[in-house]
Each structure stands twice: as structure tokens, then as C-alpha cells.
Image 1: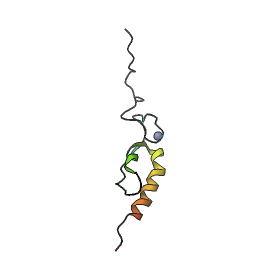
Image 2 (image 1 turned 60 degrees about the horizontal axis):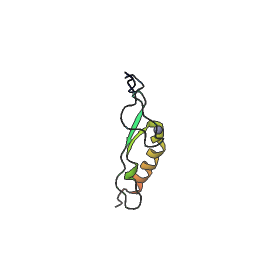
Image 3 (image 1 turned 90 degrees about the vertical axis):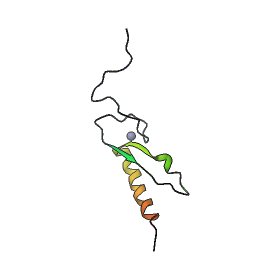
Image 4 (image 1 turned 30 degrees about the vertical axis):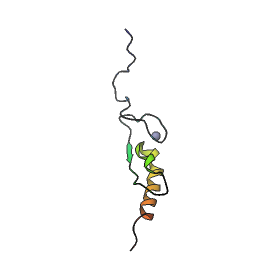
Length: 74
Ligand SMILES: [Zn+2]
């Protein structure tokens, strides 16, 4: 009988696909979980999720900039 499920192995995708490139994140690949805080002007929460580390890198720098901008002053 044909079994469509692939054998478990180190290259089996673990968890949901990357939110950036939509490709599966394999078990051995570096990953980054992004958590944007709610923002009144930008729908950043929809970007929350799991990314490849390299797909998350540009988003992380945006996040850092936004975190600095949203820091309360005084
Ligand atoms: Zn990716």
C-alpha cells in the first residue's frame, strides 16, 4: 500500500512555513520568531510568525527602528 507521507528525517519540515518566503523551515535551519507589538498605523501584527533567520533579518532591523520610534519620550 502506498504511503504518501515522507519518511521522518533531518530535512523534514518542522512547524509552519516561513512567513517571508513561504518555504518550509527545515528542522536544521536557523529560524526567528517575530513578534511585533500592535501599532495604530501599521498592521504589523499580521507579520508575526516564524521566519527563516535570513528572511527575518530585514524585518528585525525594521522592528528595531520602530521600537526606537515608539519608545515613549520624556
Ligand atoms: Zn524564508
